[in-house]
Amino acid sequence: AANPTATVANSQGATQKLIIPFNSRYKFMVSVNWVMDPVQGKLRPAVLMKGAAEQIFQRCGTYVKGSEVVPIDQAKVDHFVKVYDTFGGAGERVIGFA
Image: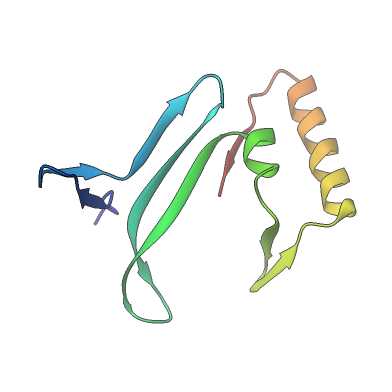
């Protein structure tokens, strides 16, 4: 089953999706979706972001390495820049997800 976008009631009582649509100025979009939490075994809201890799990366402070969540250090920044430049230099579009 697809993970539906979460909704919230607005001031008139109608529901609306929790989403920030893609904007070419900021180059990313954000949505709140219901996802199955494998630890709790139930649905929970999750904030999902996608867009230009450099925009996503600069908004992150940690990343998942195996089963660990680790802080982004200078070595990871340097690695990101190297990979981004390699793909970008070859004309590839680089999309980030968080």
